[in-house]
Length: 242
Image 1 (cartoon, rainbow, N blue to C red):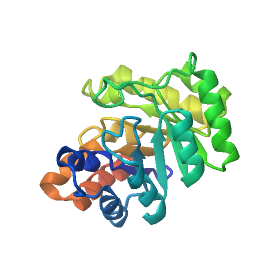
Image 2: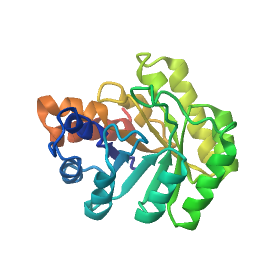
Image 3: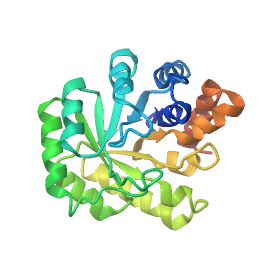
Image 4: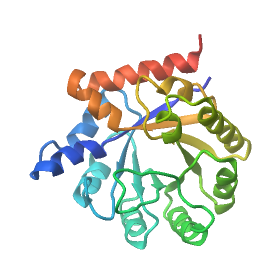
């Protein structure tokens, strides 16, 4: 089975910083530690309300990291313009609601189709790879293909928050299989940790996992580098099988 990439989301390092203000802990320094520990890329979500990651963080990440930057953002003119400016390796378009604590569901690729299509076209002209954060739903996969996205990131929250409900895992597996059949790259993320990542990592069509909160939380106890190596070990074992 092909190697599965691990991208580390550093948003929650910025959350700790913003709780007190100031400059520490620095999410860019955390990103560099993630790379040293074996992360294949760094993910950062610049929200419209700037609740954690700030514009300067994104600019410094784009200029500093040695792997690749996956820039998460809403499909707004402001965010797409920033993506056109910094030209990260990839942009993942995600839904945003000011009232939510974290992203609670996938993009509405039906009602939001024209806005999403326009953003994807701009990213393509800028030479930036694109991904859509969607629910694990085969119709959402089909719509994403039709919109012209390079990849989809399947929302693993329903699986992670229901203690591995087999129906949620099946939805991920079916969506991933369809995506691969339709020629779109398949990623996944949200709520994954060392205790639940195995079955998702074992889905052969999923090429990349985006994990953040669990790694930052685990780092409190064992350090960021060891937290990354721990989850990387589970992913690799799951890809190899029993």
